Image 1 (cartoon, rainbow, N blue to C red):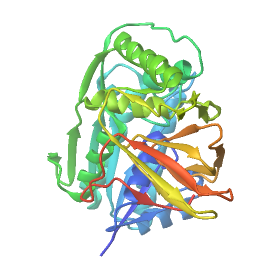
Image 2: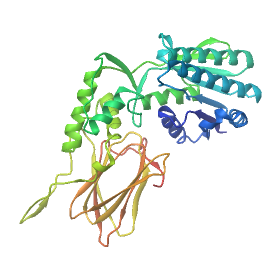
Image 3: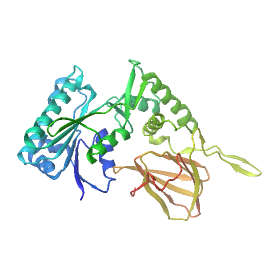
Image 4: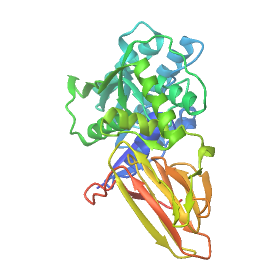
Length: 378
């Protein structure tokens, strides 16, 4: 029997990753949520009634008036509880709190009091509430100048802007994939939470990396110089640097591609260097007859390059959860490549009249036990 899960704030940074990760789980049935539900009591009641578990991520993080942040976040929790009570629903509500809750600011206060409201509901109404206290999060699709310093740095560097460091302190960070796994484990009931009182549980999630702001900037600038300007893949053996690289790649402007190769020709023929890399990986090639399409899948962690060296191809990408398709036309007479961002389904089609030859590089060899390959048409 499938578990019915709803995610408030599913369109946000964390919500996007959580919703789309849960969509890959065969034992979970997702209940769609719209932001407008908080303004429509009947729709909100219908939503909570349909859910076995609700992950409450909807919140305001930034506003010029801190009081608006506090009032908004408290109202969202109160509306959720009211909908549960009026519809006699008792879902397990997983609350996204923040490490800011112990600090003297209204955002942190809204998280601390929101948790208290949910705990009172769970204790008195027979529901269940679990609060996850979240540290600073980074990852693909985080909003620059809003969610994290990593997102701001990635965006600026990839767009040839110069970031500034206001305070070069050490920050504790958690990568979005690691955070999502905490949510998944909580949904499954396999994580070790602390019982606060009847039906009320709590878990403080620790950062898995501590790093100075200047070090983040230095690494990202190296990615710009080596990866964007020279096409060199960095070493991806360290988990933090791999996560930072996957994050950075998602801020590379779409018009950066396709990148043309330098073709060296003499009386023997021609030579084209496909990729220089500081890491291991898998190189391969394919031949495709006219009008055939390969691919239509996406990855959540793998770095991958498609290089067309003969024939004519159409490479298409679409970010999961969106309808916008990016088309790249490549011609082997001018060899070029396109890299596949994570969480983008992609394919390649032979649009010429001759055989298409494509070379592929991916940063980890194929493992059928852990393929990280999910099929979805572009």
